[in-house]
Image (cartoon, rainbow, N blue to C red; front, side, top):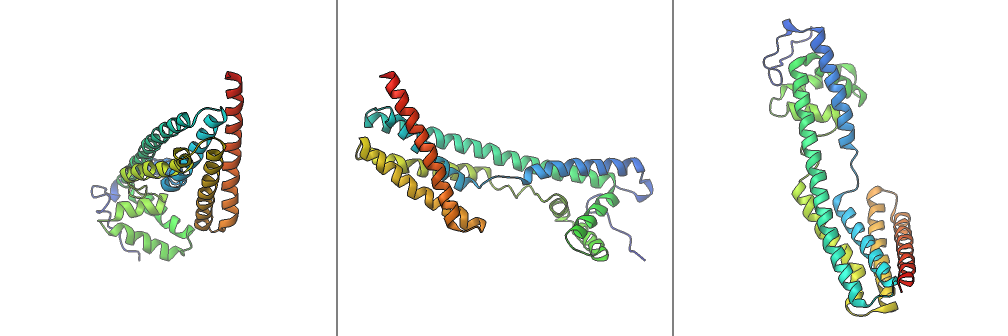
Length: 263
């Protein structure tokens, strides 16, 4: 005979005698809505560090080559590059903070909605927990026992059930402050690479050095991504270099055409 479930951890005021089909249906609807939201939260992008470096490299290489293509003096290229570095770094930091903070808030809302479903009909949520565990390979008896074990731990029941059902938690998105600072610093590092040659030389020499240094840095970023994804460094490095080469060539060409037209 199955032991009666202790709902006190997540639904202390719920009385099994008052269970109604309406509450069950509303709990089911709440869980379905939360699942759709959780799927959007879980579909995040590349981490802020890699994104910051890569954006800095591509953005400032394209800008410096575009300005250089317009046949302007090195001082103008330097000024434009520094302005782009500062503006881009601040923009990346603000964007990352808003993005990560939004994820934290949405994940917190998911936890709140799940608590509401617990209050409406604990058996419905417990059934979902057991179903989720069966979908991950547990047999029915083990899934039933495990789901009851999850809800029996008062301190972690809410967060654990949220993560099992929807794959997200309010602490999974990370710190908005750390993401913002990392993005700012790493964008600045990436943006400085194509700009450095313009502080010591100019003209075609600076263009060549700027492109070469950015190419090396891009190969490093691509190789790192390849290793992290398990696909190997060479393909990712070559792909990254190709993207940077095409973007910079187009920008330089546009700058050259614009400079000719203006002159």
